Length: 607
Image 1 (cartoon, rainbow, N blue to C red):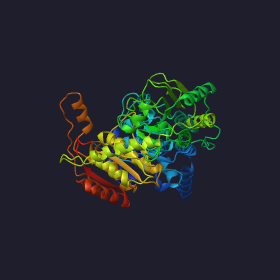
Image 2: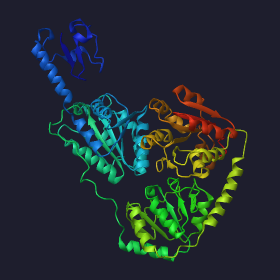
Image 3: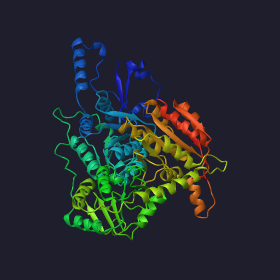
Image 4: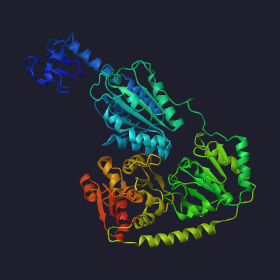
């Protein structure tokens, strides 16, 4: 029996396995992989008939096969290096142009060194990796094939880039000899990823492979950006040198506790000393520094406001908490910002959505000097690691008298706002449940240690305004504002915090984009508790059309019964149509052992 190889895709036709001689195949037979005719097949040289092989030959063959199985490939070395740099999760899809790389990932998963979540759409893999980075500050990886698999990653990678979180993208690529003419699934991935990635390289046969992976992760970690590695198909299975070693981050990463310049500290200290009514605004960039910031705020009696992306970084029940500022915010935060005579900003970028007042004395502290005064001049820009800078400022003002205690004023503002919220909750047009009632029930029922991944749309605006956070972590697509983020982000959140309750909040429009990922949650028993607001409409777009004096057009949605869809996927599905059912419905999904959905039929007008 003989083997014949396709010179286009390298498929091997084995007469013994196929149980038919090559000559007996009809002339119209085509390669089952690439569709090429018989004429492109060749007979490899020195192809010996197994019938005449000796037992010694067989033993040599078995020994060679065993040795080959034990030999490491380029992919093995690079994945081992990736693990050494702290990557614990890969989200993605296995396919024909990443099989060698996928096999290296498989080996490490089976060895207990790595975890893989196979998703239904590569965009979900990138969103999950982005959410993992937002929650932990550490990179996860996303995996895709060449061409459409790789391009599907781009939206989620842009989310990571714009929100400044580390992600590693691993993409397959067609064989190098086919690049250029326009072969099947050929896309210039270097060009396609050029703007979204802070660092991108193609892995070649003679590359310094462990160093490429080290540089990818160093760029991702230090620059809080997307790194990208392209793996041509035939390179992935090339055997590594026998002395090739996986690299480690030892000696490659500096301490990031950068102290601010002395002159900036002196200017900031003077501003704080002279101010009568200073307030603090914390953004997403300060999420890992809240212990130091709160010690500072409590010592000086400073009201604390958050950006929308910073929601949850201080509990709304804290005596100094003023809630979210901006379009998704509360009157409480707006009052204290307007009444202040100094704004101290930690880790916020002054987005239009947040609306930080420009004409007040402002101290801005950030690790990234490009963020300081990005949109307009600030009084004192302070470059330094936020926690370190707060500690320096704390030592300077330690002996200062605290500012006037405003906790009673804060409590009074909250009392007024909560009274207004209760009135809003009771509004009923007969077209569904009021969004304020949904988030009031969530405030009562969601555990304090939960992670909440929210989507984009009116449901998210209402969440920011009406939900009162305790100690929950909030994940969102901030600067990109990508619809569809919520459910894939919850998958990423679970991998980062498997011992915490994971909540996804989406609208019907957002969930519709990645609803296949519910089967991913069921497959891996990821206990996402999904609260879906269904109003059969892209409500935010309808509102924007009305605000601009245009007709509402093409925003209605044809939806399934999402609760039954959840059941079909193997999850728990519950639908509620009256606000009196909300608390019990949330309790039921929280108690369920596994993925669960509460579909809430809401009024698109009552947001």
